[in-house]
Image (tube, rainbow, N blue to C red; front, side):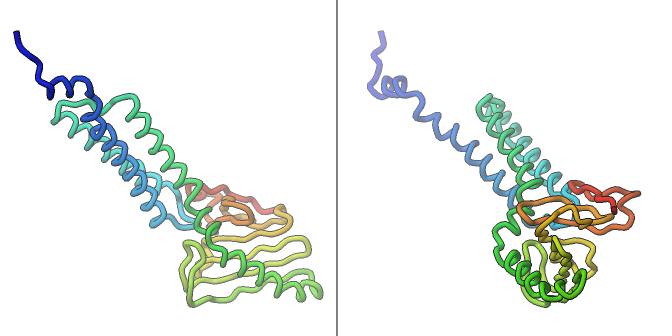
Length: 226
């Protein structure tokens, strides 16, 4: 009759201690992949451009990581498809896509207090002109700095009417960028353009005369003129 050694008995009574690192490592790796996907979205996403490519990059990154994990699991004779880990993997993948679609552009201006301050300053300067005339429209070029994902050189265009105002931070061609809208929204802003609301006063827009025919960039809606 064999005699159990103290070491073997200790291993049998504490089986979870050796498995814990193996369970934690895939979760940490999945979180890391989620952060990588989110960073890629932050680097490649621009206001007024389609969100399809940044979201496709998220899918590619997670698909590659999932395939790699299954391959390693098959070589090691372990199971990757455990319910808990699969749920975490799927949940973080969905979170990454939501961040790309809803979060990146909103965060880029939401955390940039300079943009809102500049917009309010531009409107305040135009207030006196509006008192003497029915409206105000002016564009100026900026050679240094940035607003959100828009890098210099860019243009600031200010439009003010009696009940509303809009300040655009746009590319030099004025074909895409951010817009800070105050007052009444239904004043015909973004007429015949593609736009989407980001957060608070902030919008993103794309000016494309072919939009009624070819459609807006993915994630944007066409705003028909009044």
